[in-house]
Every structure is written in C-alpha cells, then in structure tokens.
View (cartoon, rainbow, N blue to C red):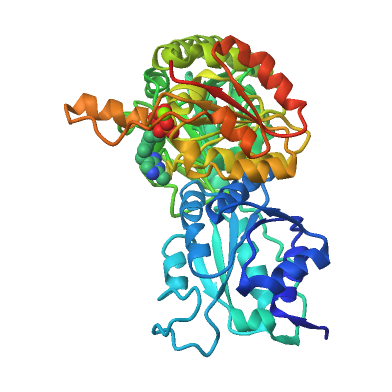
Length: 533
Ligand SMILES: Cc1ncc(C[n+]2csc(CCOP(=O)(O)OP(=O)(O)O)c2C)c(N)n1
Ligand SMILES: [Mg+2]
C-alpha cells in the first residue's frame, strides 16, 4: 500500500473522482494539499477571498453538473466560505468544502491555536448537508467517496470535510477507494401509470420546471412536446427548455401571467422544484387542477404543496418513463395536443413578456441590447439585484440548462461575479456574462483581480443606481426614513482597469451589444459600467 500524507490522500481521492479544478486559497494549515494539487495536475483557481471561491465552485458545479470543490484553510477561511455553502445548500448545488481543522489531540476548549474556532465542524455542519471530521489519514479516501456519493446521489447538497491539520502532514498507508456508482431511482410503476393517465386526459396541462430538471433537458422537451404542454420555469430551471422553443413560456413563477397559467391548468406537473416562496414571491399558487410532482428527494416532494401523485425519482428517468407510457397508447394522438399546446404557450408567453416588460421597464434597454449576444452557449450569472430579478429573469431569454446562474434561495449579494468565473473556467468557449448591481459587486469585487489573472474574456456589467436600490424602494414604500442605502459614487470602469481588466463606461445602453461582443473576444475581463444617471 502506498504511503501518503493527508494532503496527498485528499487530492488523490479528488483526482480519483474526476476533479480537475479546485477553487480556493492556500494557508499555513493546508500546504500539503496545495502541493498535491500541483503534483496531480489539478487546476487551482486562486480567488481573492474564500467566499468568492465558494461561489465560483457553485457556478462551476451548476454549469458542469458535477460537484465543485472549494479548498480553504482553517477557521476564518472556511467561515469566509460559509455564506457560499449556505447559498449552495439552499439552491441544491453540490459543492465539496474542504478545510483543515484543529489537530487530533487538541482539547478544543480555546488555547489560542492559530485560526482556532470553538467548533468549526459544528458551524459548517449547521449549514451544509453534513460536515465530517476525519479521524485518520487512512480514512480520507472513504470520506471523499462518501461525500461524492452524498452529493451525486439524490438531491445534490454541499458537504464539508474537515481534516485535522496534523493529519494533512502525517504520512500513513492509504488504500484508494473507487467512486461509488450511484443508481438512479425511478418512481414505482403504479404511480407512473396514475400520473400518465392524468396527463393523457388533461386538456390544459402545464409543466413547472425547476433546477432539479437541469440534467433532464431532453426528456423534459420530449414530454412537453408529446403533451403539448406549455413550460414555465423557476430561476434555476430557466433555459432547461430553450426559451425560443414554441412551448417555452419563460421564467419567473412570480409573474401574474405565470400564476394564471398554472392556476387555470387542469393538470400541473412540477419537476424538480420546491415551489418555493423565493420563486413564487406572493404566496402559493391556488391550483384548480391536479398536481403531480417529480422530485428526487422524498422528503421534499410535499414541500409547499402535497401533490395528488408523488413521483419520487430521478427527473430524467421519470420523465422518460412518463413519455413512454404516453407514446405506448395512453391518451390521444399527439397532434391534438400539439396544436392546442402551442397556442396556449404562445398566448402565455405573450402575457409573460408583457408582465416582464412592465416589471422590468427600467431595464428594458439593457435587456434589449443584451438579447442579440445571447447564443446557445450563453450563461448569464446574475446577482441579487433588480436588473436580474425584475429584469433578466423573465425578460432575457436563454437557450440552455444552467443558462441563468442566480442565488434564488440564499438571495446573497456578491454571487454573480465569482459564479461567472466558475462558469467561464468550466466552459472557456462559452459566452458568460456577469450582471451585478453597484451594491452587490462590492461584496466580492476583489474577484475582478482573480478573473483578470486568469485572462477570462468575461463581460462584467455593473448596473449602477447609486446604492441599494431595492432596499431604498422598500424603505420608501413603508414610509420609513431612507437611510443607509446610498453608496458614494465609484468609477467601476477605473476600478476594473486598476485590477487588470478593461473598463468601459456605457452611457447609452444600446452600446452594450457592441461592447459585450468586444468583451467576449478580449484577452481579459471587461467591466462595463452603466453609471447612475
Ligand atoms: C449578503 C447580503 N447582504 C444584504 C442583503 C440585503 N439586500 C438585498 S438587495 C440589497 C441591495 C443591493 O444593491 P445593488 O446590488 O446595488 O442592487 P439594486 O437593489 O440597487 O438593484 C441588499 C443590501 C443581501 N441580499 N445579501
Ligand atoms: Mg444598486
């Protein structure tokens, strides 16, 4: 058996699980791991803050469909990544967070050890699916295999592994462990039959599609086409069906038109969505029809609404199984569905676009200028800013799964830029655009330097309205004093240039089409600053 130190054992196990990229920052306690990354030829993406590393790993995971990895040092470093861990948890994104912990023989009661945190494992364990502290070097391959099994089997959630810092240095015999092959689950036949009968008999079916369907784009389209069912998506499901598809209504379950469509349907099939308040905004739908849900997570299939038929299983396989049943004779000819479905979808899309134009009136020129540069590869990485949730979510069509990276559940500021970096690292040939507010970008603005160092051709739009616009509006609406929301003016173009990016001031949003096109071909990121007028 080969002898490895803990850092090597960790990296060998990551390598064995197909990890080719790790986001993180080195420190005194994790040096053997960074040395091993170099040894194994795993790409190390150095961010400027651990929160950025966590969001980048999240963006990487969303785009590739494989777990992202974030490696930090102990104490404040892993706690810096905690907001990203919470964000990944709330949006069901598989990210492995790895950090050193106090030495194995440390009493853990506070004696001033460097980076000491009273209970780091408990802190992370309260945020992610689970946090595990390994007890020996020999255990590391098994701990990594278990973490990957947890992240890839069932509902994806982040995991934290803590390796006592003395174990990262200590050498011991280590037996590699092959990745666990995770079987996919399909709902039982009787339930599939029941769902297929309901769908076949439906006159006005609607599909509600969430992030849980991201890996099921083909089967989703096939079922939608078979049924002639209009497809509405959440933020995380945006693009699972190309938004140019005749049955695609668009994204934004909160839109009044989306609500009407769902509430008027006689059968609603919800796929991989929590039907979450963070997508619906104004309370649960009052469905008049029958609800069928597909969810990989048995514990989540009744969340926010208990469906008439509960299909617990993998989205792709379950959708396939439904389509097979419909094709093999349950229900009417597909032509009948097709013509009606397209008309319903067309009407619903027009209504949703009208809603989007009203809600996003202030950002229409920006979105119109961006539309021509969005192609089949494009990923929009958005932040929790009005131009994204009142604007791009419903008002800018994307054409691929994971085409819209957005912090739906966590609603965290500072997500967009590092998530864009993770996506661009994952897919260098794809067009990735970051869209941020002047408030949000400052939470992780240091990552402009990381993106510049990586030479990423990344347009970074900063839509500046002089502060925390959403919060300012809320204060005004409530009649509260307007305070603590105005941010002094920053020249974001100059800021970008100072960090090694191009920086361009955009006074007319119409200029964005050319500016973004140029940014896609540049040798570095381009900050496109739309100043407050
Ligand atoms: C980490 C974090 N801190 C605070 C908030 C609360 N918050 C929500 S929106 C917002 C304002 C964001 O400003 P900006 O990014 O400029 O977008 P705008 O609202 O102006 O469009 C704030 C402070 C948050 N969502 N996340
Ligand atoms: Mg703002």
